[in-house]
Length: 250
Length: 291
Image (cartoon, rainbow over all chains, first blue to last red; front, side, top):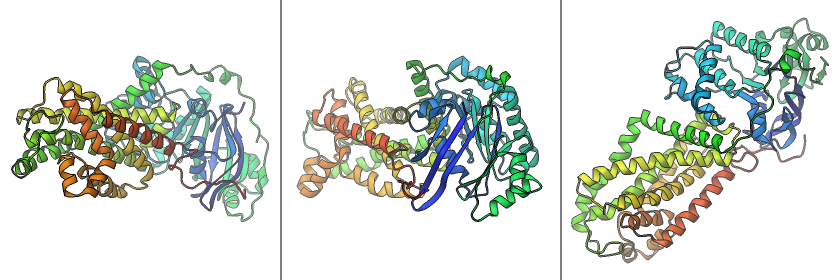
């Protein structure tokens, strides 16, 4: 069963089409990079997967649960890190995490244990009583990742999670997420426009102005596009006016 | 791209099955939402002070001046002539609930702009439950503000029958729910924080002044029959009267019916407005066609 299955999804804002017939799937325990320039439709896709918007055309399934029809079951299996900062700055790290735990029906000792363990995972132990306002951008992201993992999701969505961070923070967060894929078996959809965040073993899904223009393993996408590297492939795919889909089976 | 087979070592680790949510989980969620609202309120001392100062200014300054020019006849629930300060106290309680309800709507717009609202909306609990929890959280904070005001008013010599302080609690709760539900509905319609000034001008001020909060309805009827009709159509009128009667251990059934009915109506509309498949929250979406 796919961790995430997006089938024929389209979405419009009034007359402006943001996504057009997008289909792809993500296997459990894999790291998939959703590549696209600004305005490609990445955030719209995230809003649809997280049921902030309703899917009116096509379907989205998370471990077989339709996001529109069984949103509760679907959302229990997914952890989300949004592009915008979503921590409550007036509350402490622990209060922010406890609030999220409560939103997933986790309370008391269990919540405290999970919070302590996850702060350790994201290397933020000892900071739980600090106000969120006092954290750096990178530290806030780490807390948001810990928050997204609190309810033990099987799929993690991260929308431009490293935007605005310095190189060291970016590398640290990326390494943390990749480790989670290996050790915890979490499937990850990592949306970015930063091509240097893609590694050779990754799967990639490339969006361009709402159209899916390539999907598959990095090597296969590079080969199919006739480019020498994923950077060149992304550059070509992002420029092509009437792109066909470069379909590559893993 | 088809999904590759799951690695063996991963298959054993991944928690795919989840315990079904029971009453305990719902209560944990409710407690978490209420606690967060209370913590936010405690962290924002200015909000607490301003919520207290506003009605106190009306009580200490406005009422002192108007006491001399505005007589209040004996009208239910009062059995004797009362000081003007006593008359406007239920209205000032309503004012706190009104401003607090709108404040919570402002905070929802702020949360939406800042992104905090998303963490609530992606919770796996039903959307209606999350919104009701948010409302209960807002009402809890409002009621705490009302009682803080009543304590100060008591020291100022404005006293209701002792039992009234207990009897008024359900009336405050229901009125607070109605105003929070209205605030929530309005928050779904406001796209930007800047538009909140419109709420002040078109909802809070007309709602407050076109009600018996400051003057009895019979006086308004004498002054302007049209304004009287507007007051009768204003749900806030009934919230104030419900609170006023409750202070004296009485139930104004008409007010109770209107406030309860409006609470259900506003809440249902807010739930629909925040439903991604039907509501106003989503920007205009595709309705089919040229995919």
